[in-house]
Length: 168
Ligand code: S3P
Image 1 (cartoon, protein in one colour):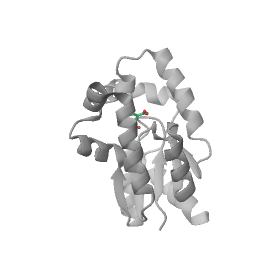
Image 2 (spheres, protein in one colour):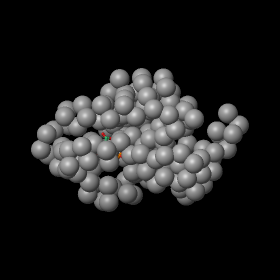
Image 3 (tube, protein in one colour):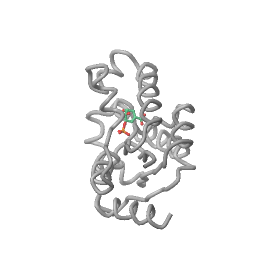
Image 4 (cartoon, helix red, strand yellow):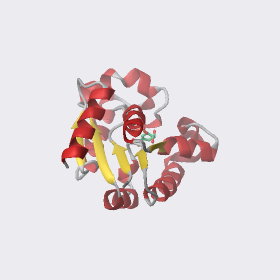
């Protein structure tokens, strides 16, 4: 089966949903950020601090383009992955892409927790985060499926995805 890519803004639940979906579909789950962390042997926060965003993006591109050419994976990609045209093109070209979206208010409710390990949110003002949110939402346009996740549990999100996969 074609890979399924889960994208969407930080904190929408890509990893949680991806793991559940993988179980239901009997596919393998991978989180691209986890692989990047393993390759550097550092956390995302440390990678950004030590090497900067550019190096992170280079590794992210290498990891995702490699995974995207395989089959049978549910891949949760970092919320900024589609800002790299090569990643966006290979994912949209070869895989079934799903965007999990959440309203800005939902993201803000989770902000305190997200700031702990998201370098791009850590020291940013609400105005800056809103700008980032707007720019990012534009990158997710054109995915095969968009699920609005506000007020849905992870299981309900998975059910919606499965329903869409069944009915095409
Ligand atoms: C990022 C999203 C993060 C992680 C990194 C940068 C982004 O992944 O890749 O902190 O640029 O949006 P999640 O979307 O899984 O939080």
